[in-house]
Amino acid sequence: MLQSDINARRSAAISPRQHFIAGAAVEGAGGARLDVISPIDGKLLTRSPMAVSPI
Image 1 (spheres, rainbow, N blue to C red):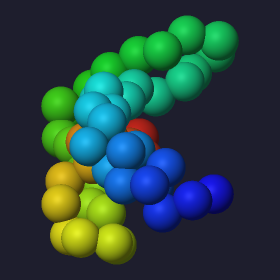
Image 2: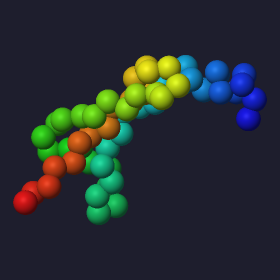
Image 3: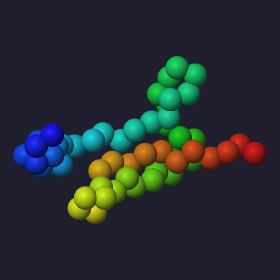
Image 4: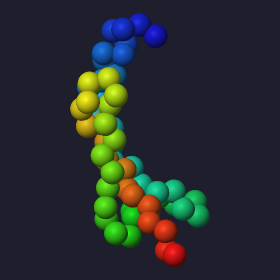
């Protein structure tokens, strides 16, 4: 992959993710999210739902 390809992908928006449970995409019950940060430049890439154990 060329550096120009990497640079082009850095600015691409990544939509917030959901859990994949029993074949369906679902939001986390508590609504808490984890920031996913790029190790390259420290910028926010997306936010992922945090899973919580029911136990």
